[in-house]
Image 1 (cartoon, rainbow, N blue to C red):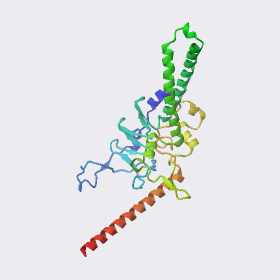
Image 2 (image 1 turned 90 degrees about the vertical axis):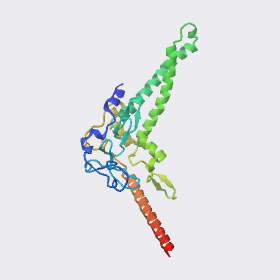
Image 3 (image 1 turned 135 degrees about the vertical axis):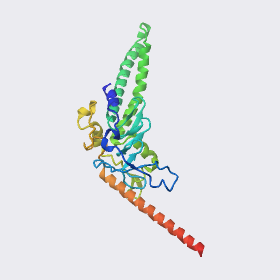
Image 4 (image 1 turned 120 degrees about the horizontal axis):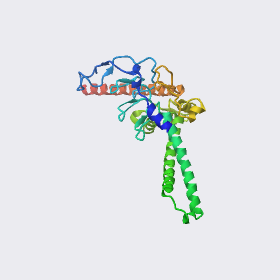
Length: 297
């Protein structure tokens, strides 16, 4: 129950919680005059992002740049997404949970996973107790002398059903913690949503292409500590290991530790892809000019 209430009370966290991440000045779209785009559409920030915020998000063009949300009027750190249900940006957003009626994000993800594990253990304990009682009644013919409780049967069935489903959900969540990824990032990597996984590959000694790991993947031990803290006490108990302080390093949902080796390979792939795109563009222009000169002749 403590983990349940802490999940709701702590909240997922948002860039709006940090005054330094709010955007107050915008400039007009420079292309609004030459197109049919309204002058107030797609505004651009007319101020610099805070110095303490570092980003490692590569855009589709391979450019590294700061992202911002024009709906929330704030800068978007790495792994931040805008939630239409909550109506605001969420730090390290995982998903929106209807059972909690709240987003699961950076500050309440630990409590959410702990709640799943606590509840799974509780369901299996209930199933073991009720199954033992029912088995004792049915196996020893006590049902001929005693009434069989319908509530006991329902509790046994519900405990088994919820135990299986919550255990699978818990194992999936633990897997995500070990990989240091979120549900949104997992789906993006799985379906290559909007080219999010475009540069996440390398070639082995045989020239075969293979995927790189997530740039936030620091190894399962460090990934676990990133979410649950350094001590066994924080692993077991619903104790907070984060703080909402802008300049507090890597435990505020704004900045994240990354795998530098993987990130360098990722940036190198993006640079090579940009060079290839530029070469293809130049080749198309040259072919077009040659065709135009041939037609004139």
